[in-house]
Every structure is written in C-alpha cells, then in structure tokens.
Length: 618
Image 1 (cartoon, rainbow, N blue to C red):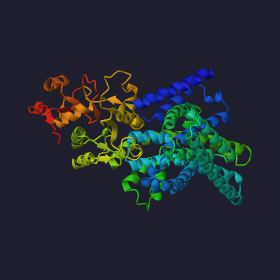
Image 2: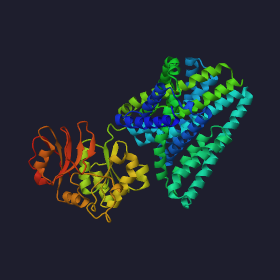
Image 3: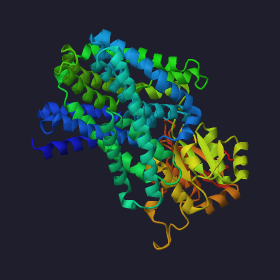
Image 4: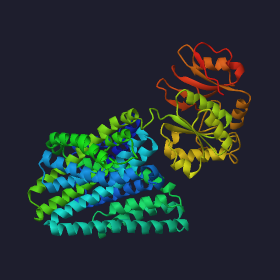
C-alpha cells in the first residue's frame, strides 16, 4: 500500500470514529482503537512499514507534548480554591500508593521482574486529558469535582513520565548507593529544567504577544513551534522532562492576565482531536492480535486489581485526613481513572528502552521478553478502563449526587421580569436555571422567587471561568443589548457548543446588511416567531403568563396555534424524557408527548382545554 493511501485511511478512519462516537455518545477512544486494530488486520500494514521506531516515537512524543500543553492551557489557579488540597494529595500520596500497588499487582499476576513491574506501576499512575475531558463533558459533575479530576488528569501525566524515567535509571545504574544518587540528581534536574524553562518561555511569549510582535495569523502556529522547541530542548537537557516543561508552560500562559490565549486554545483543541485520532489508530495498529491474546487472561485480573484495589486505595489513603472532600465525592473519584494516550506513548518508549538495556547487558536478558508484553497490556488497560468508566461514571456521579441528573438546564443572560417568569416556571418544574444580571434589584427579585441568580456580567471572566454550570447545558442571551447577546453566544460556545447557545431575536434582524450584525456572529435565534426584547418585555408588563401544554396525538401543535393564535410565543420544548431545549424561531412540527412552555396573554388562558396544565407566572 502506498504511504499516501495509508495516511489518508488513518485520517479518514480517525475522523469517522470521532463522528460515530459523537452520534452514539460513546468514548471515541474505543472506536479509534477498534479501527486501528481493524486497519492493521485487514491491510497487513502498520506505520512501522513506513517509519523507523526512533522517528515514530519522536513524532508520538511531540504529539503528546502538544496534548499536555493544550491541557495546561485549561487549568486556572482559581479552580484550586476548593480543589487545591485534594489535587496536591492525589498527585503526591495518591501517586505513590497507586504506583506501589500497581507494581505489586504486575509482579504477582504477570510474574514480571521488579524492574518491569515498577516501571509499569509508574506509567499507569497517569490518567490524562485525552480521556478525562470527554468523560467530564458527558458526566458534567459539580465544579469542585470537575476541577479536581481535570487538574489531576493533566498534572499527573508528566509525573508518571518522570517516575518512569527515575525507575528506569535506578534499574540500569546498579547498586542502591550509586542508583540513589543518580535518581536524586535526575529528579532535581528534571524539576529545575521543567519549571524554570517553562516559566522563562511563558514570560517571553507573554511579552511578544503583549507588544504585538507576533501577527495574529501566526500566533497559534508560532506557539505550536515554541511548544515543540521547549519539548525538544528540555528532553535534550534531561530525558523525559519535556512533558513537565510543556504542561507548566501551558499553565503559566493560562494564568497570566495581560494577553488572551482563548483563540490559541481553540486552535489547540481542534489540533488535539486530530492528534488523538491519528495516534490511537497508528499505535493500536502496531499491536498484533496474537500479542493481545497472549496476555488477555492475566490482564483481566490485573485490570480488576487496578479498578477495585489500586485506584480506591490511592484515593482514600490520599484523602484520609482531608476535610475538603465528602465521602461520596471520594467514592466518585475512586471510580474514575481511565488511561489514555500518554500511558500508551510512554509505554511504547520504555518498552524499547528496556529491550536496548537488556541487549547491552545493563539489565537481565529475561527482561527483554517481558518488555514485549508491556505495550499490549497497557492497551488492554486503556480499552477496559475507558469502557468501564465510560459506562459507569455518569450514572455513578448522579447516584452519588456529584452531578445533576439532567444537563439540559438553562443559564439566562439577563433577569428582566419576563425572564423571571420563564425561569420560575422551569424551576418549579424541576429544571436547573441560573440567571445572570448586573442589576441588583433584578437579582434580588429572582432570589425572592426561589430562582438561582448571580449578580455578574455575562461577559466577565468570573462568569466564564468560576461559575458552577453543573446541570446547565444551554445559554440564552436575553439582555436588552443585542451586541452583548451576540458576544455572549460566541464566548460560551466553547462551553456549551454552538448548538446550545441561543439569543433572542435582535432588533436589527430585518435591517439592511450594512447596518445589521452579521448572522454568523450571532447565536441561534430562540422562541417561536422571533420575538425581540421589547415585545417580550411589554408582554410581561401587560400581565402575560406562562402556560405549560402537553401535546398528544389528539391535541397537536396546529391545535395549539388555533387555540391561542399567533400572539402565543412558544418558549421551551420538553420531550418525554424531560430533556429541555429552547424553541427555535422557525417551529413547524412537533411530535406527540412534547410539552410546550408558552408565553400567552391572560385572556387566551382563561378556558384551557382539558389536555393542558396551567402554570401562572408571578
């Protein structure tokens, strides 16, 4: 097969796997691994047929560095107000407990040498943003738990890589006396290089961006090149310190206050999806089915030990004296530790290192055969942990009360009278609602109605980074200012997705294209017949009420329109599973068992048909 054909297949299958997993709400890694195994089995071709091991591992290392840098860009120190102590404990005590227990399991289940067992224990302390991020988007836990899991998943990756280096250097150094000196020196050098180099480079990048010395169209690719340079330079000074360097670099840039990295982060997020798609297919394709079969049965016992023993023990021992986490929160953390691309990449690197060391006589010859088994074992761990945690984590989070049972709640930008009427009806019906407004009197009125409301600007840094959106999955920008509404939908599209950011119809929607805001700069227009802010405000002032109507095969949307006429504004739609969504401006047909929330004038609501239940706004 021609190299171009192979690469196109890898790219196409990677994006197809992402698309199918999105449609079926499955962890994308599972499909990527399946496609990788399938491509290798059907074509008999792997990436090794085109690239040497050294080149391939260099590419994999660079790709992993980009992923960790992008993860670092998402970490804000403000999240550590609640999560700081648990994160510190998990990344220290938790790492130590997990590494030791994993090494013991590997030694007794696979009969590995202690060197190989310890190396596997070090590698498998990692979780990683490639698997944690997608799971968090599905689970939507409360802010504190989300912050802990995200910080642990990103920070722990370079820690695992560094531990693996230290274990390897300890093994090849010989006697305890000489080995301890080598390991301590390597650790100190890694920390010094990783942190100092990252901070210096972050400051340099900040200065360049602040003084506009990098043109806008080059910012993202310039930073990509800098990440590659930082990773290579750091690794040249100290082996495997590059992952620490790029992670700290990302964190430093994310928390400086002088320049925005939002557009850079968006570019890196898109790049991450592409990289993950390519890496999992390429790396899984290198593993023969026979290699997986040879270690399958002991691997199942090993995976059970990781899930039922190592992870729970690391969580509960790390937080035993901590008052920051409730028992149910610890229980949830104990049930979430999927492994991702970092574990696969680091294992591939050190499996080769072990083989070379055994060949050169630095390690016993028996270790070479054991090194061959490391990669299939870790891939089986990845498959099993992603599958098990992907299936069980969301229902477990809801059962333990660390995540809302529904993530279709709504945050309103604005708290005008008509918004409070809608929010009150939704809240009383059990839906999560959050109102944001800068006017104290509006927020106070909302709170008197029992509605969750915060005095904040929708465009503030506080709103985008510090608010707890658990149970919330949609934004409706409904301030009197159309430009603010448009900006809010653009700012929050990276949190809720473009499909879930809405705004009320702008007053310039029918204006000439030279005067109206461009349509691509707006969110989706909500509410039937596209009512503007003045119309909604006037209806509420004139005493309009919120009516909840259940559509059936007998009473359809057309019947509703005939009953209440064109003046009725359909606001929200609720399906039979109680999933809520705003009504789009163009509403033509709705299925039976859909519940409508509508704003109608009181005269039309005095004699409702028997199918309907009336909710009067206050």
